[in-house]
Image (tube, rainbow, N blue to C red):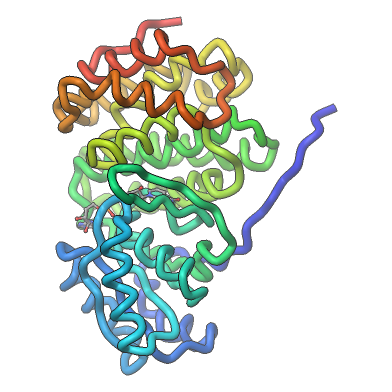
Length: 354
Ligand code: NAD
């Protein structure tokens, strides 16, 4: 008998094309009237355009969201929240913008509407990773979980191909680790397998034609499922390594996940045979570590951490930090094997076969 515990997070999800036109309706449904619009500096114009659907409900805009949610940025944004008397936030963008909205919600319990424009999946989780003094600390709290997600596939059409690929594989990483999580359960595994299939099927089509709306919809749907997986069960070695590398060296989030994932899968391969069988099926067969590496490589992703900005002495330092306060993992953490894993990811070597 398969004994399990399933914890579902409440979610209201609007999915489709042109769905941002429903933002006003969603704000009214929440009973909020003074929304603070959040974005990165790069997406400020797009965010303002989308926020026009909120009309007079917009109290102001804060367009300084940054990757890895630095606490200094949140402190600065909190002043704007207070000055404007905002009663909700609307985060328009990728995981960085969603992260800022979550950091504000954690401090204020304000409701959040998220309009995701990447495949990061953060919008579906009660998890917040904040960076302070070179260390990324993750917390989970019901206040952090966004109240409403408005997925509008049209917004993903502008996502550059390279970020579409790495963001998609970032989402796949959530589902991969959900398959072998300590709390793995049949519902989450079903979503994980479906999410991985949808994204990995869509990415080659997006590579051929980034305007392929059906493929974009598939990828966004998969990203949502993978985000739900991330929010439902604990993550393992792969996420620990990426949190460590992100916090220590500020490496770009999605590309770093893409370079590390095949090696984390290779590390856990023999310790989680059932998860690997499902993963292989979702990827269309074969050794899953190799399949993930080859897919990302074919899609033009940078497979070497060194090329993403990892410093020369980074491997040793990252192994030390990853070994301290380790997450649960199906295979125990072994210093020498972890060093080898990161050295391979650092140089961008293909994982060895099973
Ligand atoms: P991002 O949000 O940093 O976006 C990268 C860049 O792409 C930004 O300049 C952004 O403005 C731009 N961009 C985003 N969407 C675009 C679009 N459609 N068109 C054009 N440009 C666009 O990248 P990300 O990978 O989505 O998010 C990374 C962050 O999310 C990290 O801080 C990571 O820790 C966090 N994250 C958190 C969770 C969680 O559950 N807590 C999950 C996944 C990621």
